[in-house]
Length: 76
Image (cartoon, rainbow, N blue to C red; front, side, top):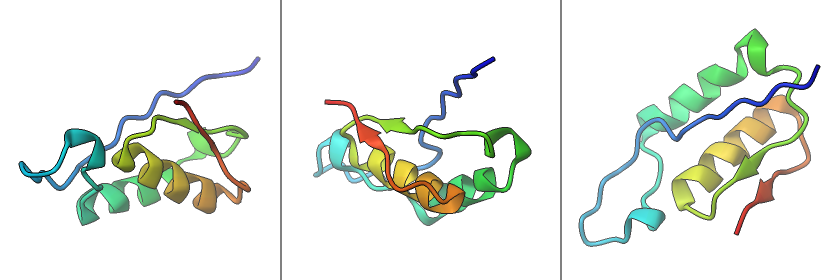
């Protein structure tokens, strides 16, 4: 049976002068996504969908790279 995992971006760099949608993941956030790749629960993931926000895009790319997927879908 197919499963759906909803993963939020873990930690961001808050820049008050920058729109929230353009905030990047912090190094801690990147490390948390990389550690997720090691979790057994995500090894069957075959499709990744992300919002247009920079932090979601960065997280999706790390996850896709870590799982050996060719890419992901950005939902606009």
